[in-house]
Length: 89
Image (cartoon, rainbow, N blue to C red):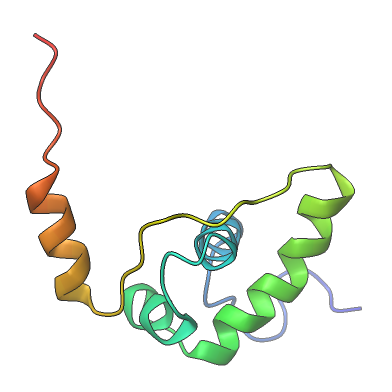
């Protein structure tokens, strides 16, 4: 065990670790793209998944695959530009 405040600084916040794990499990994007978007390496994304996946399973939160697939940042930008959310008011 490592005392709080010692050791290497986490590259992803706890919320980011959950987010990248869910995005990866939903097969939204490959690890390389997620790593690029979050400014880390693919192994960092993999480690996050190894930490978070058992927690999701233990709390019965199954993650289903999405029909959307993105392979580049421009794929994501094109999708977001195409499906802009309209204001309700």
